[in-house]
Image 1 (tube, rainbow, N blue to C red):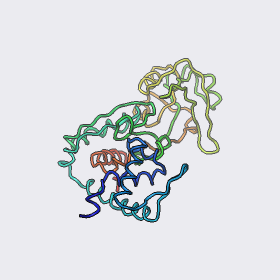
Image 2 (cartoon, rainbow, N blue to C red; image 1 turned 135 degrees about the vertical axis):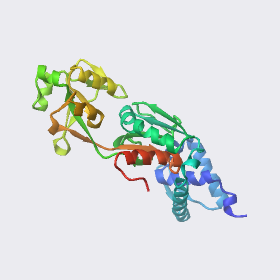
Image 3 (cartoon, rainbow, N blue to C red; image 1 turned 120 degrees about the vertical axis):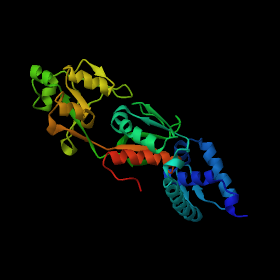
Image 4 (cartoon, helix red, strand yellow; image 1 turned 45 degrees about the vertical axis):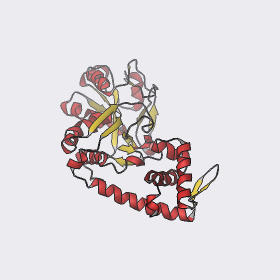
Length: 305
């Protein structure tokens, strides 16, 4: 009987995750376990292998020579398993249960809505649940398989996959508003305008960001109307309520139709691409990988390798 018959596969995954994240606590969060459970798993694994795999201290975790060699081999093995699962056709994908993803509103509109018809076609029996939520959450503890956020908002220790190229944030207003109140020529001119306030998921008011690099600026703009929903903000801007701060891709249709116009375009602020992020336990889930590939292809990016 080989060692493989004695060792639990999940214990091997926990071991690799501990090394990847650098601590028992971080690994537990990523895997949706308690720190105690990860500790017991490591103790069980070392006992079954009769080998110490980790050096433990109050501040850090490091692999022993045997642990480093085992981790390297396991990573190679997990990659092969992931590739094998990823090659499954859509018939097999249809039997792989469900996906629950947490997405903020702009990503839901720009990325998930267009992808759903193709996902359903390729994975007809997968139950897909999409929860739109702008508040930051722990997707593992909340029971989600994945989430979408801007790259710089993705929690540490997660596996990430870019879904788009870089984005731009712009100030925009309706032609009617600009005709009545004038077009701002400088950032300082915004002080004399009605600016629709952007409420973040944590209920704080967002300072508008302009420019990039050394020329970047963050401004607290004036305005009596505060909205925490992009669709409502766009509607208010179209109605001439004031100047709104929006993701340019989110108002592409309004800009093409002339319902909104970008003001101060030279001060448009770059933003990181949208990223899908997920725990390593879902890294090889073919239905999740299929959804990521669909979104990436629709946004001009190549499939994941």
